[in-house]
Image 1: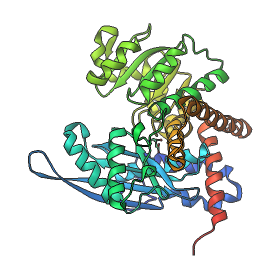
Image 2 (image 1 turned 90 degrees about the horizontal axis):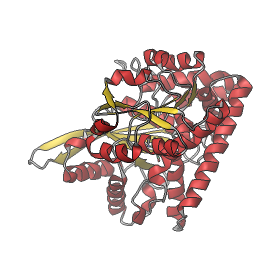
Image 3 (image 1 turned 180 degrees about the vertical axis):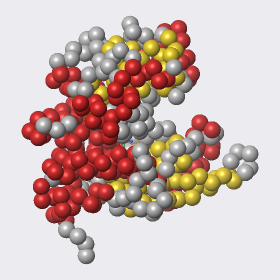
Image 4 (image 1 turned 60 degrees about the horizontal axis):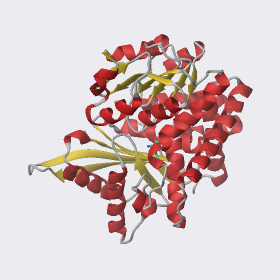
Amino acid sequence: MSEKLSFVNPTANSPWGTYLSQVDRVVPYLGPLARWVETLKRPKRALIVDVPIEMDDGTIAHFEGYRVQHNMSRGPGKGGIRFHPDVTLEEVMALSAWMTIKTAAVNLPYGGAKGGIRVDPKKLSQQELEKITRRYTSEIGIIIGPHTDIPAPDVNTNAQIMAWMMDTYSMNVGGTATGVVTGKPLHLGGSLGRVKATGRGVFVTGREAARRLGLDLRGARIAVQGFGNVGSVAAELFAEAGAKIVAVQDHTGTIVNPNGLDLSKLVPISRTDGVVGFKAGGDIVPNEDFWSVACDILIPAALEGQITAERAKTTTARLVLEGANGPTVPTADDILAERGVLVVPDVICNAGGVTVSYFEWVQDFSSFFWDEDEINVRLDRIMMNALNQIWDTADKHKITLRTATYAVACERILMARQERGLYP
Ligand code: GLU
């Protein structure tokens, strides 16, 4: 946060600053609704909580937790919970705002929210992880709920953590509230297809963008940054379609192989040893070299702010698929556009996760569960409809896909805002 603690004064080069400039770019396309645009430039509500737990060695440790509800004009807040040592309130504000745009872009009946704890979960035992999750859930329990704000997994959180969150909330309200979180285990009201949904959505939008560019996926060279739930699943689906995964980077380093990495070996090894564990299958290179590897498609699927102006100048990709939230800074966005590199923005590219979260929530309320084919067919249809509409808007105004996505999404949000009117 800047020295003047205020929602509208972002720290230089921060994700929140990136988000604000993305909103500014869309104002000319909003017509009379531009009157309401300030609504989007501040979160509706932000909660900071202290999360104290007793560690295994008997000491008491305090962690800082957040839940930000950016906008609820179109429905309850929706968005994941991130456990990461670098999480800040300002970052969570940006992530919550991107959820508002994302849910509107794919037309799900949700607003946007996000949460996080400033902690390195790799340093916690399983017992400490459960304690921190439960205490955090209890602290944010005053603002979350199946009809108000529904958390989900994000960076370093998973189905087990969602199960603890669901249980803690349920204990506190005296019932079993499966609809309070999504991304739960299957036998606790989870949905088939949820784990792979974000990566699948990256593939679906990427396949369509490649088709429109005339880029054949067979033999296409792909570089993937981040090899977790999003990057590895997208890589597998592209490889199945005939593409070659020529470079992968994760927190352990960067591995390249111009002939294509063997994912059947890389994926399992990466889960325990990181991608550098697969030395036998490629060359380990310095991390910065990842950005200039010869490739056709670049998939940033890690954290924010990764595609900087410098890296935008050196990439050889024709297509960027934003699996991560906020991976491209605004100056890099301009350079990519000038260089004719097509960017499928995060707020549509990675919306597959929240789309299947929506299916999970609907299934929880109806207590009727769909098979995986039905999930994937519906996911495909929602993502394709959204992408086609955004593409038409981009063509009509001669703007980037990002600005077009914001135009479609912001119109929906601000229309709802206007129709609801100001209270009191
Ligand atoms: N954390 C994911 C995202 O950034 C999913 C959120 C959700 O399913 O609510 O979109």
